[in-house]
Image (cartoon, rainbow, N blue to C red; front, top):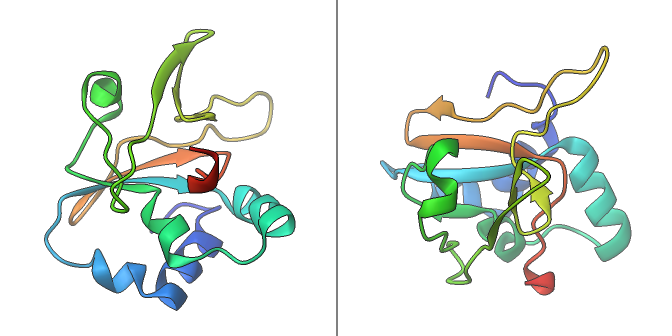
Length: 130
């Protein structure tokens, strides 16, 4: 909460019940897609499902500095893939904490929540592409 561009993600968490499932003590790390990422996913694949949202969430509070050295097991049981390319950290095909240019704000990482951390990603982590 408190950051622009997570409105659709928050709505989808609530409407699918995933938000209620992760409202406990956690901790969790959420690779939260921006509104633009959710819109693009829904245009290409249809409505976001609970399983697709759960794929964006891993157990444990994993800071951005540890993403490359920590196993990333999603709540669906599928592994997320870390890579480092072009001096950027990727989870699957999404840049974690993408740096933008000009008037646009960088995507935030290490956003502390009551029960974990949020890292913004500009591409929806699609479990069917894993």
